[in-house]
Amino acid sequence: MSITSILSKKPEWEEIQATLKIFHQNKWEAVLAGGCVRDALLGKPPMDFDVAVSASPEEVLRLFPKAKDLWKHYGVIFLPLKEKGKILEITTFREDHSYGDGRRPQFVRYTSSAKEDAKRRDFTVNALFYDIKSNQVLDFVNGLKDLKSHLLKTVGEPEERFKEDYLRPLRALRFSHQLNFQIESKTQKAIPLFAGKLQTLSKERIYSELVKMFSRGSMGQAVKILKDYSFFKVLFPFENEPINSSEFFWKNSFSFYHEPAFAWTVFSLPYFYHSPEKWMGFLKDNLKAPQAIAKKSCNYMQGVKTLLSKQESSFVEKLKVFELGANQITELSQSFGKALLNQEVKRTLEQKQSEAAKAQEEELSQKLKKLFQEFQTRSQGHNKLPSPLVTGADLIKAGHTSGRHMGQMLKKAYNFQVEENISEKDTVLNWILKKSLK
Image (tube, rainbow, N blue to C red; front, top):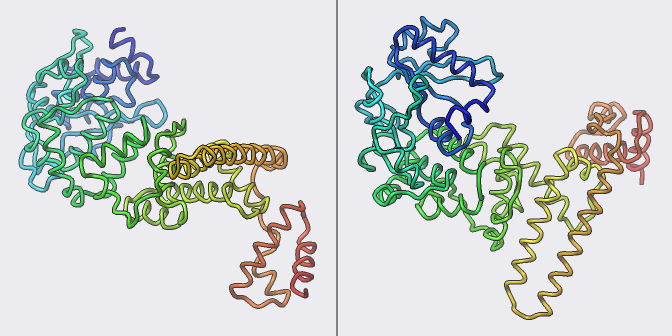
């Protein structure tokens, strides 16, 4: 299958072609660059498109007045596309100089040559260009050979390339995992030397790489590669080792990795099953994950605890789990429950113990199926939980004093409201009054 047939599967491809033609009509060289070329050669439609051009940033802005010059200093211009949410990154051919801080070049020098531009890129398979005019792949660093061999290799000496940008070693692990490529031996040896340097980078850059890594492929393999190269403890300095079921649990296949909050829950559950709030704090403060993702991951974990709890949970709590996505939470709970049981099986080779564990596993499975059916039956007509009829102000007005007990009263009142499908405030207030007099 040709590159263009792969690229044409993307809805923005026609607009990308039109953009390249505008550069060509104005006598500028313009080629597709980097990951989009790599992915197309592997037979996969790319996530995004990058274009490299001989035109200066000022010339790009003249040709495309709607473009944004947020990274103009580095020769990068962003062009919003008609396809919703899509942006085309247009970079002037350049050489990078004097990194110094291990993050970004202190200055760049523009060139008119794709060959010179290739030399500054991180890995050979990311330094390929595609010229739509000649229908040719431009390869100046033997990237095609490495792509065919499924080999990840730096452009130039690994240590020098990693000194320029301390994020590149983590990107190497991410690409190796994401593409299922072997890492070339010299590159392999250099990666662990830079694990400690991650602490000098912004947490936002690290978070972005980790989301990409944990959102594709096997969770267990992602964790393993981070551990093998001494990155795991630097990135996740957790106080305690996870429960022994973690290895088994991470090998379970889930189909939800496109959702970061769920992927993070799968990753963290063996570590933070007993303390979802601590995980939310780590995700938000240490990794700088968006507040909404941190909160949702915490809620997912609470949902798993609700389903696996030996104590009876109220229907309101179960309904909250349903709203989070009962299919996801049920499967996650079942897999985690099996992992816990698997841990028990490993403690003994006696047949009776194994049979008992299998019986418990089947009991757990049936329990979760029954619970899910209850969600579906009782949640008909509930697009979302109703707002509480009674507030703290209502209780104070009714003569109750504020304090910790009020929160407990409000929670019980809300459970009563939902479970009994109450729609009148006075009914709930009278119920609270009767409860408080007992």
